[in-house]
Length: 156
Image 1 (cartoon, rainbow, N blue to C red):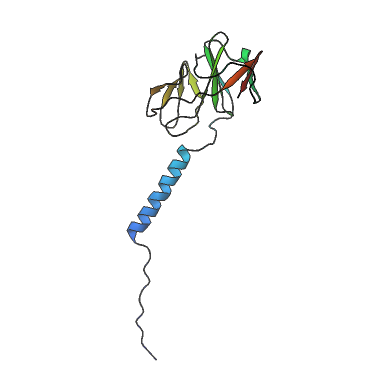
Image 2 (cartoon, one colour):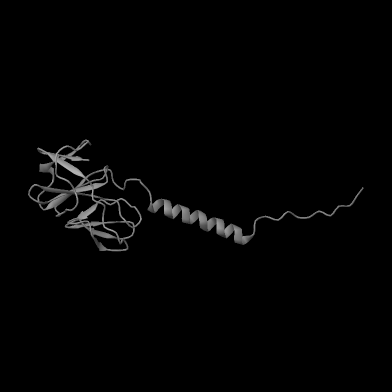
């Protein structure tokens, strides 16, 4: 019989385990911030003025989003499923912006007066022109193309 020395098999080091747990936690946090999940599938109508960056010419290719009568003059309406806010800053002038926060891509549905707010990190945007009112976001909201034909508003 031979006597071989039995060496204990070592597991991962404490440093490796801590790094793996940290990486997993970071992945979960980033997934939550960049999620495409909708915070609310319903539309929210607000009495806020909104505006900026959309076409009001006929001929859009998408499904009808709303009737012009659905968008109050000097106000707007959030369409959660489409991730846009449509507004009418002046009579017959319709604008559309993305409701995806430019900081970490969180969907936004909280529209109060002229401010669209992000629940994830507190960024606030003017719905008048899409500009940042309060960070951490530094980029304005993306303008979206809409078309108005008769009394129908269509997301292009």
